[in-house]
Image 1 (cartoon, rainbow, N blue to C red):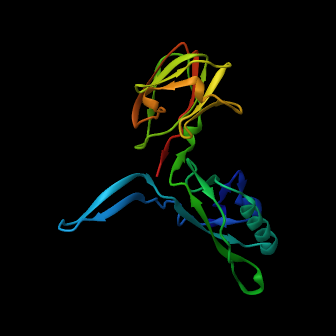
Image 2 (cartoon, rainbow, N blue to C red):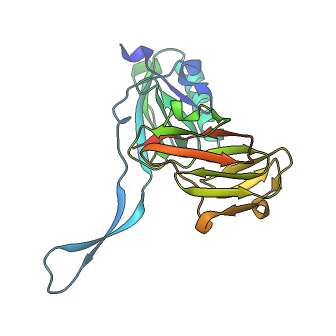
Image 3 (cartoon, rainbow, N blue to C red):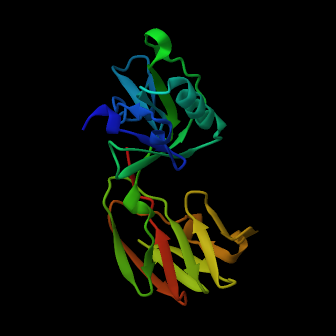
Length: 237
C-alpha cells in the first residue's frame, strides 16, 4: 500500500480530513521498563530494582501534505494543538490496537520550492500500553463463567454489576452492600460509582484489592448479583 493511503486517527478525527498522509516508521516502538540499577561496592554487576511499570513512549509519524499545503497544514496543526490530555490514537498500520496519546509539540515543516508541498514529523507522547480494540467489547455474565486474557499482561477491567451480593474474579471478591440498580467499578482508577455519585462506601474488597484479569483463563462467579457487564481492556506493549 502506498504512503498516500496511510493515515492516523486522533480523538476520532482522521488525518485524511486534512489530506495528511503518514509513514509508520515509529508505530512499533516499545516502551522501556522502569528499572533502577544500583551499584553495590564489592559486588560485580548492578542490582536491578523493578518499579513494576513501563515508561511513556514517543511515537513519531513522518507526515506529508502534497496539495493545498498552507490550508491543510494550518487546519491540521490547529486540531492537534487544540486537544488536551490523553486521547485515543489509531493508525492504519495497526488497526487492531490503539494508544492513549497526548500532543503538545511544535511542528516545523520542510518545504519544497514554491511551497507546493511539505513534510513534517508528528510526535505523540503515549501511555506505554497498546490497547487491543477487541478489549473494548462488553462481555456479559448472567451466570458463572470465565474469560481468557489473550495477552501477557494483567488487565484492569471496567465492571458494571447489577444488584447487591458479590462477584469473584480469579478468587478476588467484591461485595456490593447497597446499589441503586447497578454499580460501576473501574479497577484502574480504583473507584466505584454510579454516574457522579461515589459508591466506594458500598463495596467491600478482598484484602482491599480490586480485581484484575491475569494472562490466561480467569474464572468469574457471583451470588446475589444478577449480571455483570465487563470491559476487559486487554493491552500489550
